[in-house]
Length: 283
Picture 1 (cartoon, one colour):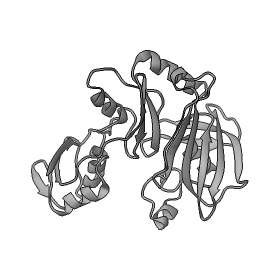
Picture 2 (picture 1 turned 180 degrees about the vertical axis):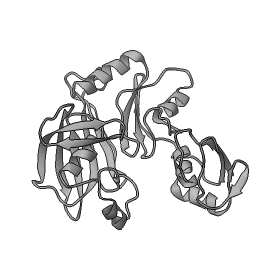
Picture 3 (picture 1 turned 45 degrees about the horizontal axis):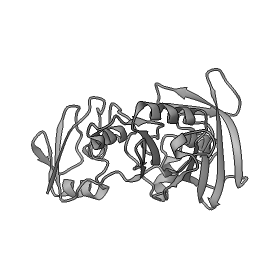
């Protein structure tokens, strides 16, 4: 039997127990969390509970389960970099409401042998490939390559409806509202907006369509907001998408995955030139 303990973050006011447990232990499967709750193997402040009660910041949650914590898969590693396949539900870097993060996992794995650094970021609910550097010089080199758009980032997603035409590269403008933690997309430049360039290709059309998406710019929530602006929101996206459609499809999570990182032969990250790394989307 495994024992896991966590405290509810100060910024997690209003969380239910299940939401707090998902946030605390994202590498445990959903059925393991529900099983422990059903068996009354969850304690809040040393009191056993069985329902999805409200929790408060500072509450101690202890869970007993027969399920072991999964590890984050590593797709590639050398003396300068590692590429991890980040599961959905894990932040890349530290966040007020996060427990395990990709960078805290990498730091623990390094065991003091090196100082890992993120070279780019993925949203919490986006799964897929993320590059981590093992030293400052390698981090600066890769970060510069991403900023210069020298790394080709490809995603797969499921969206409502079928975009037309079947393949396109589109430009729009994105305006960020930091207070609401979301962006709005417009077809023309407005004060405070930044350009976004997104390419897509239909892989399997239908009421729910699988798309391949290429990011030419890397703005906040770019793929989610841009596709929603086109009338084809990503399944499971309640922020920009169609909540009723998501529920009807039984899609509780964001169906967006960074499936490929490609490093050109010229320029970019020297030690990774000519390499392409790919993972299948988990949906």
